[in-house]
Length: 301
Image 1 (cartoon, rainbow, N blue to C red):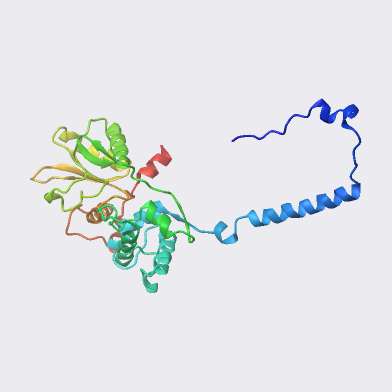
Image 2: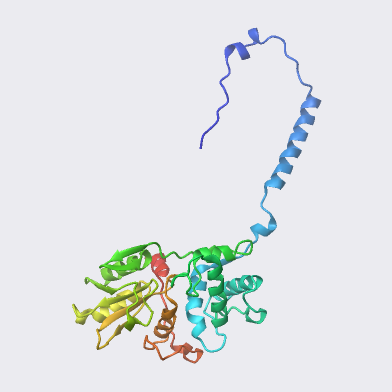
C-alpha cells in the first residue's frame, strides 16, 4: 500500500524568527470545531458499518450439502445425512424462493425433488449443459449465486481443472487423491479409464471424479490398493468383471461426478455391490460405513 507522508517542515515555515505574527485560535473555538469533527466521524462510522442483514447471513457448508446430495436421494423416506440437514434446509429455502421447490419439500432432506429443483437451478446458471454442470450436485458457482443475499458458503470444494494422468482425463482433485493413494499403497497404480463414455460403464464416467484402475499387474495388491483409495476419500471396490477385472473408484464429494454415479456411491456406503440393481434404504442404516472425503484426509494429515 502506498503511504502518503506529510511534507517535511522547513526552517522558513516554522522557525519563530521567520514565521511572522500568528492569529491564535481561542480555546472555545477549538473545542467547538473538535466537537463537530467528532460528531461527523461518529456519523461516518455508522454509515460505513455493515448492515445487520449482511452481517447476520447464515453459512452453508458445501461439503455437507454435497454429501447429502449424493446420499439422500437414494434413501427410503426422508432420512437425512448426519450433520447436513440444517445446511440442506437453507439451500431448499432458497430454491423455494426461486420458485423451484414446493413448500412441503423444504425439510432438510436432499431427496429426488430437491435434486430435480437443483438441476433446474443449474440450467439457469450455466449457459451450456454438460454432464458435470447438470448432475444434481451443488457446485461452488451455483451455490454462491443461489445464496446471494441469503447465505454465505463455507467448506468450498473445487475439482480444479481437467488434467491428464496415465493418458486419461481427470480433474485435479481426483489426480491429487489418486497420487496420494498410490503413495500409501506402496505400489504403482495405473488408471485405465477416466472421463469418458465407454458403453460398459453405464454413463458413470461421463463426468469427473470416477476412475478405473488396473489390477492385472499386481493382483495380490488389490485389497491394499482399495484400502488406500478409501483412506483418501474414494468409494472404491474391486469389480471382477469377465470383460476386465478392475478397481472402480468414485471420488466422494467431487462436484463433477456424473449423475449416473450417485447410486454407486450410496451402495458402497451401505456395503452393497457398486453396480446397478440395488438401491440404498434407511433400513440398512445400521450397516453404514464412514465415508472419508479428501478434505477430511487433508484436515487430519
